[in-house]
Amino acid sequence: MSTDRLRSEEEAFASLTELLASARRTKMLFENAGMALPEPLKRVLGMNGLGRAETTRPHMPPIQRASVPDEAQDDWISVRAQESTPTSVVLAVLRGAKGPMRAKDVVSTVTKILPNVPRGSINNIGSRLRQKIRRTKEGWMLVNPESSPLLDNEYLWGPQAVFEKTEVAAHRRESILHLLSGHQSGLQIVQIVEQLRQCPWVHAPINKDLVKADMGELKDDGKVRRVGNSKKWELLQTDSRSNH
Image (cartoon, rainbow, N blue to C red; front, top):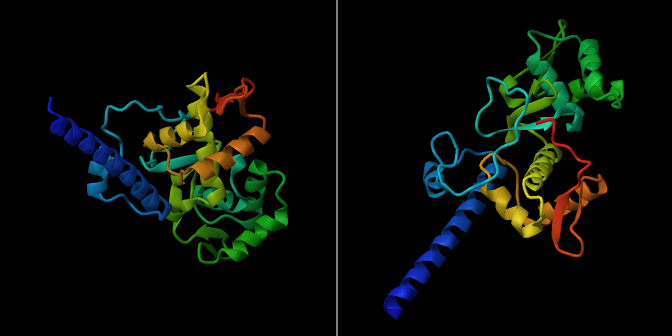
């Protein structure tokens, strides 16, 4: 093979690497904005019409739940209800109601999920979210149910746009734990970032700083630890992902 041809191939592969990296960054920007991915971008990323990756590049399979709502789409995420905000839980409870709910019933249902939240705070949500919650003599009801999370068993479901930033971060942290469960020897932060970006089921902002902060939080929670003196992180054996 001639030197010129070898150089051309090297430049071609380098250009392809830059293109894919740029496409992943663009995908993250669209997801952060809560916008659907353009078809040309999906084709570059090797995604089909349902948003699933068609590439043969191996990646971690998605987190499995005991049940999945019939309404769930490929771009939906799920967050443990107990890790969600009172506002999201209120909206999800109302979405699951067959009709208007009395305020005291909303409070009762929400406190069963979030027992440490004051009842008065839950009542205030109805007053604060007038653009989302209509209050009538019959009770509370949603103005637009599709713009709120959906409650299914112990999890809230929906596209990234219906969740608050803390809940999207919880989705990313659970995804990190899921990745580490499949890598017994551990992963460095840069490796976690790259693998998260390769997972089509992860719908959250992903960069080195965010993941570094996540690892600090997961360490404080006793879920991960450093592997000796290396830069790798591993899943603590005491942490179980048995709730998938």
